Amino acid sequence: MDLDGKLAQEETLENIELESSNSRLEFLSGRTVIIIDEDMANAFSIAGHLASHQADRMIENQFQNAVDICSSVYFDLIFLSSSIGAEDYTKYIEAFRTIPIYENTIILLMLKQNDQELEVIRGDCGVNDSVSIPADFNQITTNIKKYI
Image (cartoon, rainbow, N blue to C red; front, side, top):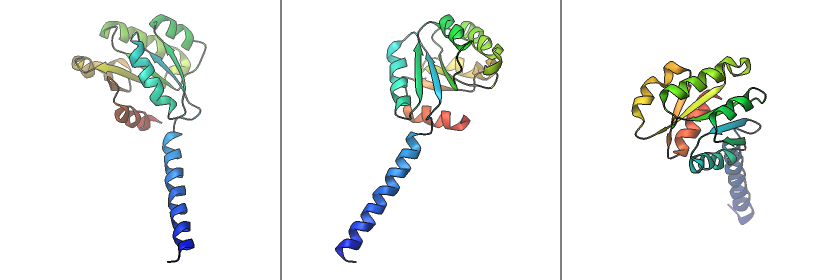
């Protein structure tokens, strides 16, 4: 193969890799996400990851404020911290699910590694799935792609 042919082949491979990379990064393009967590380090970590996937993000550290916001603004995806405890997060999930536009919205519960007992009951309270905190970005991406 001559030099021109080799350069054209390399350019084609680079374009294929770039297109593949862009399709991976844009799977959340145009989607809106709210991250509800009192721990701002967790919230900003997840928000940064979602930004790389082209999602529009909002962070709220007050749970009741988040419910109020969601009653007038639609989000495609809700990340909800389990830090408030099972009884309270169940109450907030029920509050989201009673808003008609949120009946089928994806809700991911953010669980700290020592919250394994919450993992057992998450399906019973209307949560779609859970993600580990500190953030495991591969798990977050995989879990979101299951529902989008």
